[in-house]
Length: 274
View 1 (cartoon, rainbow, N blue to C red):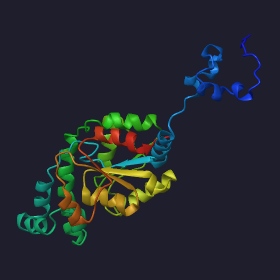
View 2: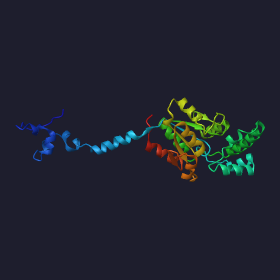
View 3: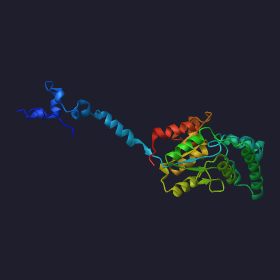
View 4: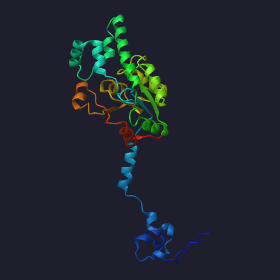
């Protein structure tokens, strides 16, 4: 049983008010019950409480992250310039590259070719992709980021313009599963928003609750923007600048130089409550 010694009765009723007593230096502090001490009654300043609540309210909820594969989850190993030259020929490659300084969309370009010519082009592309599979390496920070997302119960999906065999090998070799994992067999492919909207529908979430992470401004960021999702551009080597954003009228919501930075920005900018 806890005993509290009360002060003797006073004719001044205000003297029994503990708040008033704290403000009265003549009131003996030894007679003040411990649970009414100044430290107990001290509250944060109103300005601090307002700031804390404002910061909490400003964080958007994130329910899923969708990744590109080549150059994002895996180290880039395909020599795309050599592949484009093999498909297009040197002269055509130089012409198209001059017309598209932000990058060549080879898959889109060959769609207008005859069926026979397309078949030859896809065979060349498949050969380069197979060589890339033989040297497949996980991107630094990918495993840790996926572990963090799993711990927060945040879904993770994958969209790539590579083939399904490459996605299956990625899953098998590195033991990280993404679902849904859409390859170029899913049409239309990036930068069309269809694959990302399909994933959002499968997860039953809104696009603005999902982030698209990738290393291509014209494919990954465009896909995310077109779908109404958040976007994060992985730019390891400072490949993109403000002029590139202006040329394509595309500006990512976030730009990082490593997947480790993605880990940090998620914790700093989003409500990750499951």
